[in-house]
Amino acid sequence: MVDLWVQLAYLIAAALFILSLKWMNEVRTARLGNWAGTIGMAIAVVATLGKPEIHSFLWIGVALVLGTAIGTPMALLMPMTAVPQRTALSHAFGALAAGLVGTAEYYLRGSSLGAGATAILCAEVLLGFLTFTGSLLAFGKLHEILPTRPILYPGRHFVSFAVLGLAILTALWLAFVPTAHGVLFGFFIVLALLFGVLLVLPIGGADMPTVISILNAYAGLSASFMGFLLNNKLLILAGALDGSSGLILSIQMCKAMNRSFLNVLFGAVGHVVETAAPHRDGRSIQGYTPQEASTIFEGARSVVIVPGYGMAAAQAQHVVKEFTDRLSSRGVDVKFGIHPVAGRMPGHMNVLLAEADVSYDRLVEMEQINPLFPETDVAIVVGANDITNPAARTRPESPLYGMPILEVDKAKTILFIKRSLATGFSGVDNDLFYLPKTMMVFGDAKKILNELIAAL
Image (cartoon, rainbow, N blue to C red; front, side):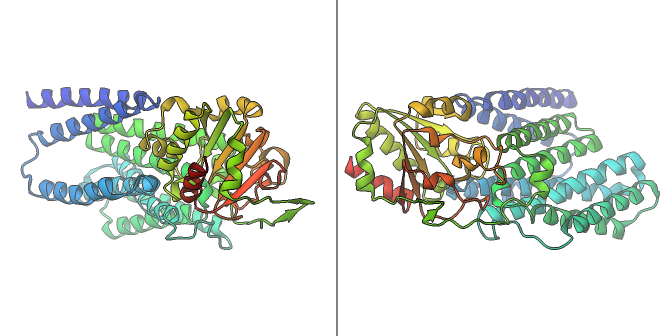
């Protein structure tokens, strides 16, 4: 009877997980989707704790207390601008949990599992531990503890594939030689951890949104494999949903950058850095003060704001909202152009603007906003770089060539707010800086926007 109730709870949880993904597909229903996923997971955890095979709750209680002690400060104290870093840490913790469960299963009953079950377990442990170290490196790059540029060394591809190949051979040995190999399994874990480091180390900050999505898919697959091993249907389903959604999102990210998976993982985009200069090809960068720049809004009737990582770094989303309200009170039509890979994770700009209570109606995706730029009086770029670079259309030799961009260069006037002439994560100088209609205002985005508000 207890098992029947557990399976019923699992069915409800599974339905909530599916609805969660469905509702998260729309900005208006994303919060409902978040609640659905949270409630579904709570039901799944409670139902699992009710299983009769659990004889002691001591260590489970200890784990719950530790998890709550770590997770609660992360949720409450970490600023919204650090959501990408928090996401990477969440992936790391989830993957570590999967890897540790697989390790415990092997040392508890490894010799009795059989070749097929051991192979599944090794796949689960490999994905879990490589995602753990890969996510930690992604966190380090996102938080700038580690260099955001690709870290390259001679023969890196050979070394990475050699480690992966050795891990696979070790897994096959563990699966098909029917004797316990505790030390060999420990060596396999070390190889999995090392491969996660080697995988992410040569990837630059520009590709971190896609890397986060790929690692999310790996963590989901790891959980799904563990579900097969433990005969837990909900774990299989939840892992499959996580893995497939992460894969689909990664494909969308690659499409948004006109890149392939192989190019993201092994292309090392950003290791060659172009140097921006005040003058180039007879064109010069025009710098302005906020007070001078405010004059362009006197006759403006339509404005498109393009947010980027610079807005997140300056924590300027609330000032952007105030600036938007000020323009709207003057009868200006204000919209936001949202690029799929703006910031450091998928949906980064949406999250920040939602926190500042910017109306969903103002957020317009790239495909819908691009046709509006030729009729836009002023396009304001707040800390975005690569996603607005016309080199993606005009320079075949550029690493960005072919990448769909927000076509702000077609607006009548461009106001570019940026700290300096430094390049974006791709290391490519932005041709937008040199257009005669581009007004560059250098400085912290929050400070500049406050001065613009005062000038208006």
